[in-house]
Image 1 (cartoon, rainbow, N blue to C red):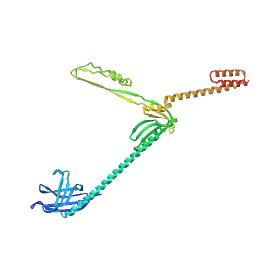
Image 2: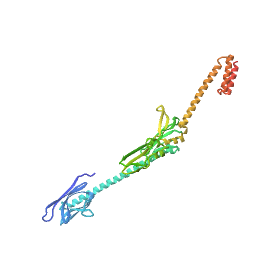
Image 3: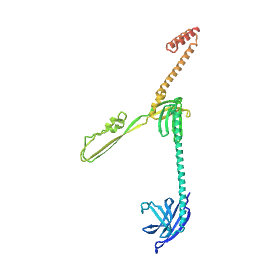
Image 4: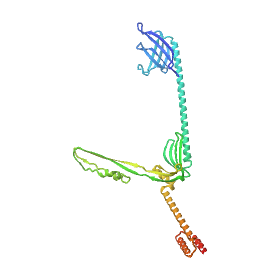
Length: 392
């Protein structure tokens, strides 16, 4: 790495003409640039000029003569120069001490600077190419990670999927696996991250629709009268009072008609403006109810509203209405079984309490009633009747 170290210094002096003033020249060679004071030839005369040049700016440096005296000459490219079109400026250093050494020193340092900058450029190119290769390899790894995850969870098994979001090597969605479990999947190939949560089929209670769509209407109006009158124009007050109700799903057309028709304005001037803006508010969703082992209770998850058809297609038996009907039937069946068991237990116990004739007749009547009302089957009725006869 270069620093601003002084490597060599050269100086000299000259006169501008036979009776001109004495001028000094100097050249300092540093490891990154040269600087000093030279003379520029302009209209056949020399004028002093301070300079500081990067080595890349130096186009030529050599020993020459000026008015018969040895001197050092430096040509460089000056982008600010307007003297000539090629922007090449020539500096001379008349009577500079040891010009041959100055030429050798400047040329040597310039070559080292160029070699060092070439080396740095090559290192930068190699670093850039290495970064590009690493970035390309990383992107291939990210793409492979994304494809492997998506293949494992969804594509390889043909699992039905509902997409929540998809981007460049990014996916978020819900899929149903072969065991009908609901899986929540997020894949980010750019960061090589995968998140997967699962609600087992036996833990899913039901899903149902929630929320609704409704509309609100903002009615805005302003009026300024500068004299004159309005004729032929009607503005409905119903639009302002009931606008929010009329701009519902079934009433948008009707609501739009209840604004106003153009008025004919008479001089001098009247300005009246009314406008309405309809806002649609959609708070529909789907509620998924499931049992959480961690919380030891039923929990709700709110899902997008359009996932309902997806769930209805692949998990129709978990729809709220069906689950409710099954639970209701199970409850009725359970209650009937409990009631029938109680009746049968009480009847058998009553029949076996006494063996007198009156009790026997009552037992026969009860058995007959239970048989006729379908409480006892024919085989059960026959068996009970035989048992009673055997006790006589």
